[in-house]
Image (cartoon, rainbow, N blue to C red; front, top):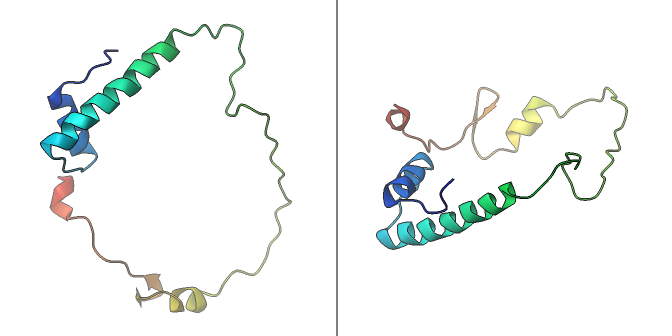
Length: 102
């Protein structure tokens, strides 16, 4: 993978992430993403033969509890604490234009 992105590639990434970047931000991001990709290229060259896959550097053991049926918060109390609700549902401000996903 190339470590340097074109301006068009950065603009496409910004579009997919729904970011509006200025020319200055786009150029800065181009350099930062290039550095990240260069680091990823370096990691690809590391010999990991015989190394067991892991999710954490130190072993982690989950302490799980037994499932127990417990009474939950009543709907009226949960929804009643919300700033806005309708028909037992939380009501939130509209933030995404439906035409944007088309």
